[in-house]
Image (cartoon, rainbow, N blue to C red; front, side):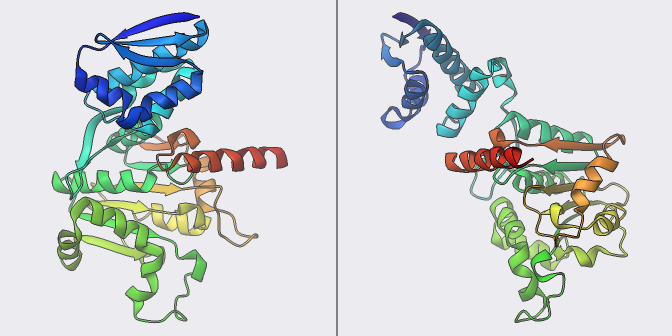
Length: 319
């Protein structure tokens, strides 16, 4: 048996590391089959040599996050464990960083994974960004956060959010209500993200002033969008023609973020996805960046990661 020690000189840090009812440290103990306990301002790790080494690296990575003011929870613990198991524990320094914006309730929005950090950096440094990956990776939420940040900094004058209404084939007439009632179900995830960032009252006020526009993709045709931050969500459900139409709406002093999950294409079988085609055609053009997320970037419940991973494995077996 081997015993290793990590020094922790602050009781508050120790509490954050261990978590409520030792929830964080229990994940590490279960992952590596080691015993972890605190004694005299230090953390002791006891177990087989290679496993204690890995557990120590995970604990040191978490302590580094705590020192930088990051919040530790079961998701961040599992993410750091994943980095350690891949031999990439030095990449812990890339997690978190600057706050993108603060939500209406005062919660800071930050990158929680390396993939999210790269995505945010790409949006900062490029005019058009594609965010491609599974559900729960924060593609839409972070894009909206960056849009709100740009708006508050007076970098743009409008936020435009759009997505294709594929389930109704862009033919919404059979649904009850006026146009807004018909398209609302398709645009609800975008509303939710904006409400979170701005609050319902501020959102409604800016919507009435046409500073915020939420509309189905069909309503982008024939427009030139200057001084705007434009987000196309669920882009895997665009046709190549729709994608080209959308991309050519770009005006001066504007940014575009296109998000989608190519494993969840709802188009009819004989239709090609505009997102799949666009990332192939545009991959080598300056000022256009493509960020690809994996199940490691999922920031929802742990089971979402497991589900995404299981479906990826099943897809690999079929191909």
